[in-house]
Image (cartoon, rainbow, N blue to C red; front, side, top):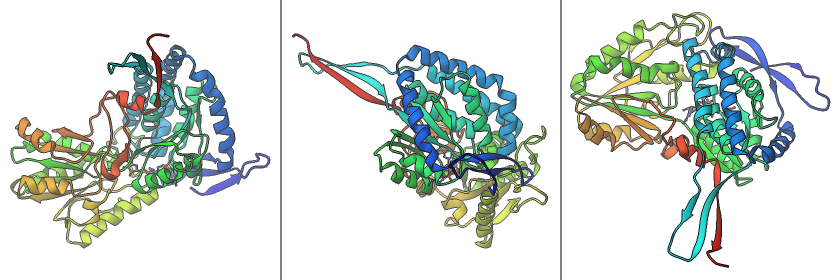
Amino acid sequence: MPMSEADSVPGRRAVRFSVVDPATGEAFDEARDQQPGELDDVVARAQRAWRGWRADPAARAAALRSAADAVETAGDDLARLLTREQGKPLAESYAEVARTAVRLRYFADLAPRTRRIDDGRPVHSEVRWRPLGPVAAIVPWNFPLQLAAAKFAPALAAGNTMVLKPSPFTPLATRLLGSVLATALPEDVLTVVTGREPLGARLASHPGIRHVTFTGSVPTGRAVAAAAAASLARVTLELGGNDAAVLLDDVDVDRIADRLFWAAFRNCGQVCMAVKRVYVPARLHAEVVEALAQRAKTVAVGPGLDPETRLGPVNNASQLARVEQVTEQALAGGARAASGGHRLDGPGYFFAPTILTDVPPDSPVVTEEQFGPVLPVLPYRSVDEAVDAANSTGFGLGGSVWGTDLDRAEAVADRLECGTAWINHHAELSLAQPFAGVKDSGVGVAGGPWGLYGNLRPFVVHRPQEA
Ligand code: NAD
């Protein structure tokens, strides 16, 4: 993200930074590099807008439904821009835009429930729910629109206003989304700010922000929590994952191979809850490696705007370097690439879809989050050993168990230390369910009514039943 020409905003050091198309490795546009000093004005405006926005739930719900319509109307422009800066196949960008609109409608229809406390005393005690004020959302580059919507839809539905900061790798579609939403929402209810660090750090510590909701890596999540401690703002952290898929000995490999492959490789493996390790009974190991490698060798890799493409590039140069590094470490430690194992020649940030076997269990591609198109497949001798291995990392986002006997698979899934466990699937989420990582994978709960209440505070009214 090199700097380019200076903006001529009087009294401010405003510059722009380049945005790169990962399919070419070339800059194709720029975004404003907003300075931390600008946040005072942005947050003050969000505070003023809050007075009106919090007052009328019915008007709020109507505005959010109009906002969903506006997102759908702008779908073509949003999807193309998203693919251009993020790299994902265009069909996936369309799906991401659609999910953005769906989230707005879902939360528009959700209202908190007032609850009476009945503990036998002669008092009338009632819990009502109040919004928090201006909140901040900081999101990563893998699903810029969808993850932003997962934050602004519940926050705005709850009656808060929001300042949203996308990743500097993917600022453009979010900036466009902000303009689209502005056609349906009152002024300053949602403000998109773009810029490089320390913009996010300053936003997380801003004294006018009452809740910081962050999605990103574990180290940045720790920094955000520390920054938010300055103002004692509430913190919700959705962090990294290293999800294991445990295959049982009654698994039907032919039947599940496609689903398992895409659970690992969708969005080029850049999914927090992608399958990042596969544990397979030793006697099925060769068959599973072969089934996955055959798919990895034949899947269409290319620019996201090409309609034939199923797997796009890695999003950015430093992530590509990271994927290459963990792969080389594994290969140097004795692993073998059953497919891929290297960058692809030519422009852009392309890495060959890689299935690794004979991987040392302490290799970083197993113990850390690779976040790219590389998948280690590890043999196990007993289910206990597989469960221990699945639970052995510092992460605890999701996990899955695959087999024909569903009751047995569920009993194994029940032993996984994570927020969501799937049987014969992975990473399928409903809008209505809670989403929460354990261990280093997160703090707080998003999704469904839990996500709405995460953006509210209880307010208790307590009065005697008689004067
Ligand atoms: P990242 O942590 O590098 O960046 C995330 C966001 O934080 C970006 O907007 C970035 O600009 C900002 N940021 C960077 N430094 C900051 C600081 N000091 N203070 C405040 N903000 C700062 O993450 P990334 O590389 O963009 O995204 C990949 C990570 O996100 C992976 O670890 C992935 O697992 C995780 N992720 C988690 C979920 C989830 O729901 N659990 C979903 C998607 C991605």
